[in-house]
Amino acid sequence: MFNIWEIIEFAIRIEENGEKVYRDASTKVSDPSLVSMLHWLAEEEAQHIKRKV
Image 1: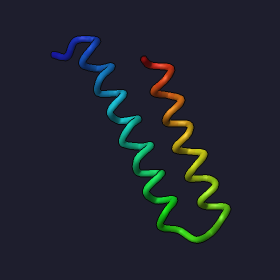
Image 2: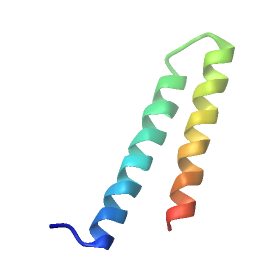
Image 3: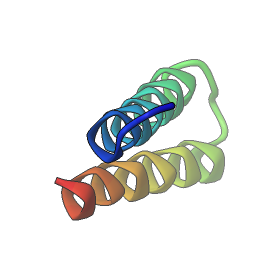
Image 4: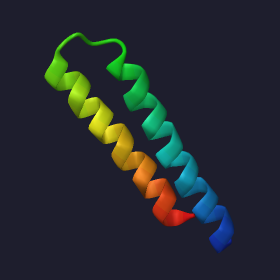
């Protein structure tokens, strides 16, 4: 069984991984609207991390 702190750490790691995936993906596409959307998604993940900490 996980305790609350382990669950929070796990959730933060998921958000960090999501942010990294979106930032990495944004460097591999050329469509400006897609790059913009990926940057927005990465920022959303970063904001989620701030709210959890």
